[in-house]
Amino acid sequence: MAVLVTGGAGYIGSHTCVELLEKDYEIVVIDNFSNSQPESLKRVSEITGKIFPVIEVDLRNREDVEDIFKQFNIQAVIHFAALKAVGESVTKSLLYYQNNLISLLNILDVMDQYSVQQIVFSSSATVYGDNGRSPLKEETHTGAVNPYGQTKLMAEKILEDLSASNREWKSVILRYFNPVGAHESGKIGEDPGGVPNNLMPYLSQVAVGQRTHLSVFGCDYPTKDGTGVRDYIHIMDLAAGHVKALQFLENNEGCHTFNLGTGKGYSVLEMIHVFQQVTGIPIPYQIVDRRAGDIAECFANPKKAEKHLEWKAVRTLSDMCRDTWRWQSSNPFGYHPQSKMKTKKASGA
Image 1 (cartoon, rainbow, N blue to C red):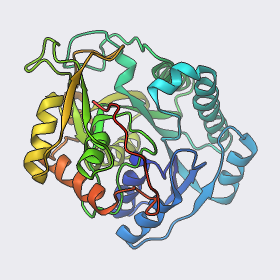
Image 2: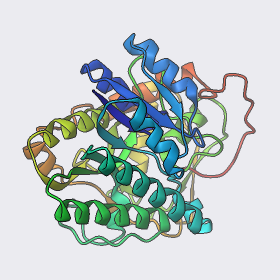
Image 3: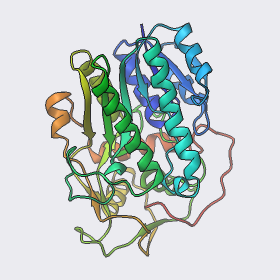
Image 4: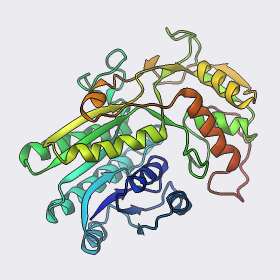
C-alpha cells in the first residue's frame, strides 16, 4: 500500500518524499512538471537509495487521475500540487482557480470512488491575510487577500464540508509559514526558476553571484528593526510534519487544521545578518519602498501541532542558512546546470 504524493517533484514535495521513504512508506509520485523538474526525484532516489513510481499527470484530467488509482494500491494522499505564485495569481486569477480547485476536486472524487479517504492537504499562512496579530492561531479569523490564498481557503472549506458529510473521510490541513533551507546533502533544494519571489532563494542567488543585490522592501514597519518579520521554518522540519499528519490520521476522524511554523519571527535584516555570519559571504542590499500588500509581521503559534501531532520544529536559523548555501553553492543554477541566468537588480525581500 502506498501514499500518493501529488506535486512530489516540487520544493516541499521532494523533501517530504525523502522523509516518507526514510520512514519506510511506499510512495507514488505524480506531477505535471509545470514548475518543477524530474531531476529532483532522481536525487530523492539517490539520497534514500529507493526507487518509486513517478508519473507525469495533469490533475485537471480526471481520467488520468483515475488511471493512477487503477494501477496502484493507494492508501492515503498528500496533496501538494498547485500553482503558488501570489503575484501571478493576481494577474492570472482564473488559471489559479481552475488549476488549484479542479485538481483538488478530481483527486477527492477519485479517492471517494476507490474508498481512499485519508488526505493531508498543503495549505498556507496566506489564508490569514492581514487579519489578527501574531502569533497566529488556527482559530484566528481568515481573510486571504489574493487569489492564491483564496484557492487555499476554498480548498480548506471543501475538506471541512466533506469530512462533516461523511465520517469515513479524514483530513489534515497544514498551514505552512515560510519554508526555507534544503536537505543536508545539498542534493535537493529550492529551485524557483526565473526571478525568485521569496527572500531566501533570492538572497542565496545574490551570494552565488547570479544577482547584484537584494532589495529590502521597507524599513519603517513597527518591528524590531523596521523590516518585515516572518516565521521561517526549515524544509526538513516541515517535511517531518507531513509524516506526523499521516500518523495522526490513522486514529483521528474528521478534518483538523494545524499551523506548521517555529513560533518565532525573524526580520529581513536578521536573515541577512545570519546568512552572512554562517557563509562568510557579504550580501549587498538596498532599502526600497514597501511592497504593496506586505504586512509588518506574520508568525505562528505552533502549540496545537506540538500537542496533537507531537511535532515541533527543531532546526535553527543557522541550520536553515547553512543548508540553503550548501544547496545553492553546489547547484548555482538549481536543477539546470547548463543554464545561464541574466543578472537581475530587482527584489527579493
